[in-house]
Amino acid sequence: MPASIFNGSISFGLVSVPITVLSATEDHSVRFRQIHTDDRGLVRIRYWCQEEDREVTFGEIGRGYELPDGRVIPVTDEELRALPLPTARAIELIAFIPASAVDPLRIGPGYYLQPQGAIAAKPYLVLRHALERASRVAVARYARHGRERLGLLRVREDVIALHGLLWPDEIRDPAALVPPPVRLDEDEIDEAVALIEAMTRDDLTGPQFADRYTEALHTVIEAKQEDRQLPKAPEPTPRPGQLVDLMAALQESVRKARAARRETGDTDAPKMRAKPARKAPSQKASSRNAGRAAGRRGTPAR
Image (cartoon, rainbow, N blue to C red; front, top):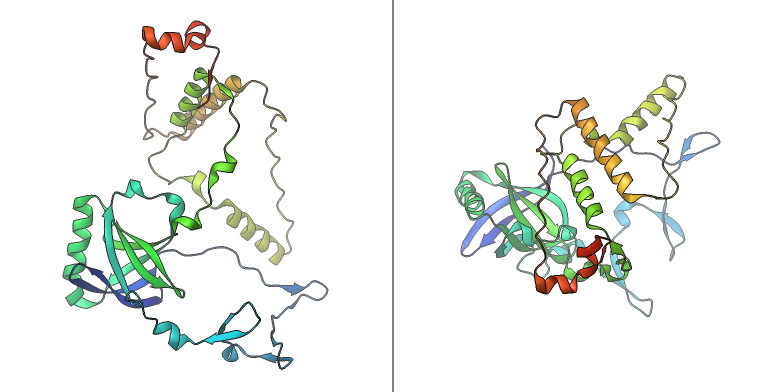
């Protein structure tokens, strides 16, 4: 069981549910230490006080806000815990929305909310079942790491999960990244859709979703530990330096994806959908799209 991050309550309407916040994720990354390459000695990070010109211990370190003129205003842990916020120890639900209305870019790490004792179990389960029945997620306001944040509550299996939400101004505007207009061919788009269909899965289970980097890193570490020869990297798959025929590349990709599915016996994968028949353009529309209707040479991108 992961350690508790903090104890508080879920507040919605006049209902308050005491909960414990627990991390919902684990980090299995390989951790490296900094070493002196000459003798493999561990390198330590030292905390140095510029005012006294000496090393300080972690227990002597606090927080401070630096003003533009260089002065530092100290802020203690007690002052942060006593912030004049109603959400300092409460997760206040302020709205309920469809999950599809949330931009995935705004969703942060996940936490589990555990009810505190038998008294909290009933209102906790009422909220969980209500979210499921209404097919909604809850938008919450809470304090975390010294500032107030928005959060998202959703049902995951039998518990309620909390995700931090970035504020709208924390998402960069992608307008500058939009590619310039080009002429698109509808047949190429159809072939790209066929490739999506061929690579569609019902879930994220299977060997293609494994953490191959961490597995390979463990293999290297074990080989060095046992003084064995390091494994050789596989030869990279040759790729053309320049895309000459997009349609041919798409068709070949579809062929390989379908062949790979047959080799793995992926019979539970969604079946390919037939290409939808294109409607014949009306007389009014044909005058606007004469070029595409006559020769299917392409249409300007929108």
